[in-house]
Length: 228
Image (cartoon, rainbow, N blue to C red; front, side, top):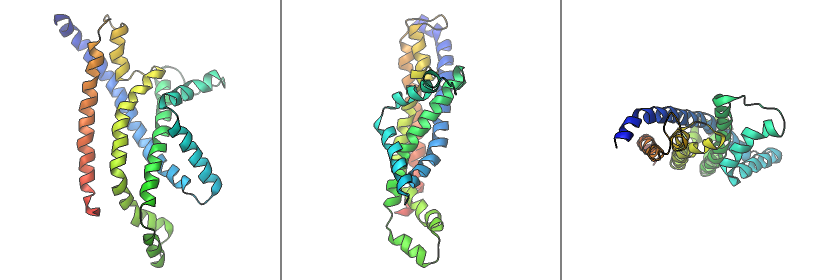
């Protein structure tokens, strides 16, 4: 116990640094995937067969393959196969590659949620809007959008909660997120080796953050109850 108490400041410092990287990847993914998902959803519903087919194929590939494989391909393929390293070196390069992989992956999942929300709105509202002289763009943004948001908040919330934990997959390309930091003390880091308790301690960070996100997303759902 005395040894653990001595190691605690070193471990907590490393875990805090790793968790900041985790949070950074989490927020960058949301900022990129939420709007991109809407673009992909609109593309999949396009009247152009080429655009619709292309978009749906991309979504099918991304949703049908493991995120871990996508991370490996996106990070290693340009340098090893095309001989054109595009991500740069070091931690910043790994973070950029992980961000691209996560944004693309979650945008495809979000797109299907968006599409379900849009298509779940009765078509009579489009017809009523056209009768009133509104353009399709005005109908979408002024009539359908808020109703769609109400419908998609629960499934989007579920995906966001999953994203918190999925960020740990980025360690497959050696991104130094919190799981990577905890595991490093098992292998040997900063004079500490063979210590498994830091790895278990990382679960506390995830539980606390998931608790915060549960409260925040729950309040968002309550704010949208006026659409009942």
